[in-house]
Image (cartoon, rainbow, N blue to C red; front, side, top):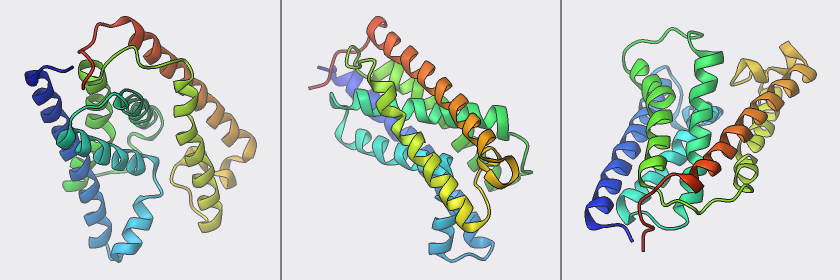
Length: 210
């Protein structure tokens, strides 16, 4: 089991990540409301983004870890979140960075959601989560989440006439290019996921929690 000191450190680290995610989400929500949207309209607007949904899951899971501590099942759960939030960071850095000019509080939210959390969550997985708990089925299980988002994002985009991300824009790119984009992202996702499983089996890790 985790030592008392290690447990306290993992809870504090989880709390810091949860605060970062909640703060970024609240800033984004407030910005949309300030621009004239209702609360319901603002929630609908921001939850069209994979970044927002993923950071919301990070906020929920890491708030629970901060309160209750790590549990054996958190190895799979945190691993999947780490992979998904890394996808957020990589896609932002390669495809989205610089598309919007941000300032003030929204610049802070952008930093927290796109840059900081995609680093903090994988580091938490490396430093605190018990090892030897993953199989090579895990990346395929984790991939269900981005696949579901792809379906949601394209259906929602076609219904409302605008897409959360330019690489999902079927109207501008056509289905062939959009599907090719999805396949390339999925391959990268699986490769990084398989690497995480490989690391899980080889890196010395903290003892499993009770």
